[in-house]
Amino acid sequence: MSGPHRVTSDDFVLGDDDGALFIPLDRAAGVADTAATIRDTERSQAARMHLGATFRSQARLAEYIAARNTSPEITFRQHLRAFGGEIEE
Image (cartoon, rainbow, N blue to C red; front, side):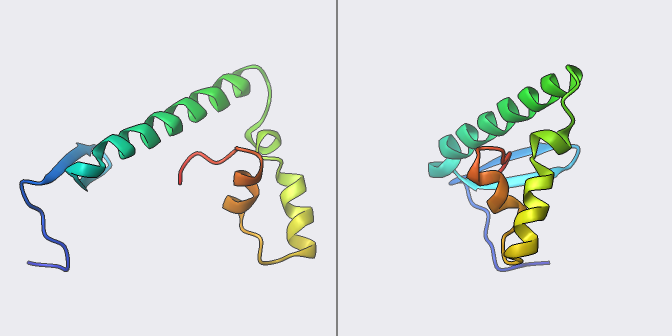
């Protein structure tokens, strides 16, 4: 089978139990930086959960619901991004 994308020797391949990622080699450093940021954010969130802070409170879910009631176009990702709570970009 073929698709719209072509993998070449200029690509960097990462894989785990969830699947594989094919990244242009010239973007690998940026992807690694983003992955490290996600890892650090998730570890921080998990540590706070161990101390009793629910993810719901960390994500300021009540604030998001209130904002959606007045501005339905606001996405959860936008809400999280507004205070640095997003884990992926």
